[in-house]
Length: 620
Image (cartoon, rainbow, N blue to C red; front, side, top):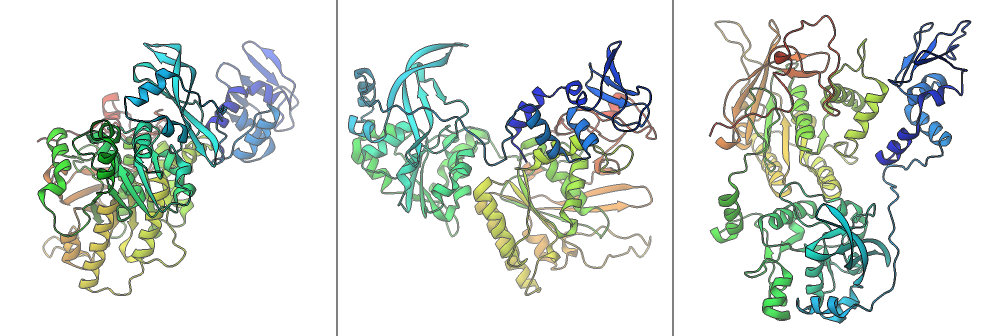
């Protein structure tokens, strides 16, 4: 696949009429253009181009489409990537392969004579000229955003190098204004300092990096974009994976505030908490504050006494003092919802949700629905170990239908363009696990962990438990395996959706109806009931078509409550809905799809009863 920027550049150039004129001679007819069709033998002009809407249609052979890319696919009988390449050649546009993005390269000027004003500014922060020279800090004029506009000003230049080549620059201007070089690659600051090192310090700003250098530490890097109260953009980790793979121990010295502690947790999840500890900056916010207040020895004291992450064993209240402070200030982590009407359960990373149900009742469909909603609503990225959905291309087709709101095949099927949009959307959001060694729980979790380190995941799916290779299958083994799974989720801050089949269905002796499986009906008995955090049983009434999602267990009351919401299943889109007519909104683009005529039309209010943008309230 090609990068979105290069494809969009090509799209801005492509004009349908210009493309079509390579294969037919058009004349203007009213506001449209007409020609003898180039798709079939045509004696009278029957191929029309609607310039205003960018569409073409032949009234002789019924060939029709929406843009120049589709026209080339139809004319040359080629794939969408082939059409991209054909038109890129026509319009002289360079398509960039995904993963080989071309970044802006700033010009490196070896200007080390800093002005007195800049030197004094750093001196006030106890950072010497020698450290500035080591870090190759420079200054220069740059247009910076000021008060809604732009103004040229003299800036401090923090230069980002990889292999001694300038990759990016962060400019610091007046009133603490910052800007990175536009279009340049995001990497860690002072990255080359990690060459030949087995340990590394990570801080939150360039002055903090300089503070550690001032104290004699050379193996220190900084994140380029600070810390956020929301999800942090860790693209710089992805871009530096090969440069930091050799680091055996990470000392995380992020800022002493809620955002800094949140970033600390996210970095520890990526690197692995077993490879991390963290630095406490006394009663100050960061390393530079410590340097200013307590001098070099103060920085050394902090860095020489790193704190271990509490992974296992017994702890005191003081081990969780920061977490308790954040909990008091920011409230409980209520998790995230999926926007499905009447579904109260919210999901938090670090826990297990077990989904059970009789074969054919829709367990896998329900899990896919939940996961894709998490991806679209909250940008959660996930990995699927799902032999129940093989082959993978079939699993993908079901995901595409859910995302677009249309069937994969049939009269109202997904178009090539919609398929392309889905592929690009899911490319760095969803991964499929197929371990090379074996299909044991350990191997699957290793693959997930590798993905977590490289890309950053939020959840993973095991569908189903019996599709893993188990050397044992007794109650004690299942208990140990579920403990391993729970610890993995907690340490790596991932939510696991575990699909597990129940034992032989039970029938009600009075009514003859099949009973809803409970968590203790899963093979392995009470271990699944006791060790999972949340539990759902999917049960379909085949007579009415109503699918009940029985929420059997909720870890904490602020995650949701026990209840049984009921849904209908839309075969066209593969989505669940509660009432009215199905939601056919394209979840990626936000467009509404045409509803097939055979479905009963109801009011617009009913149409958005299950609107994807809605959120469920928490009644406590």
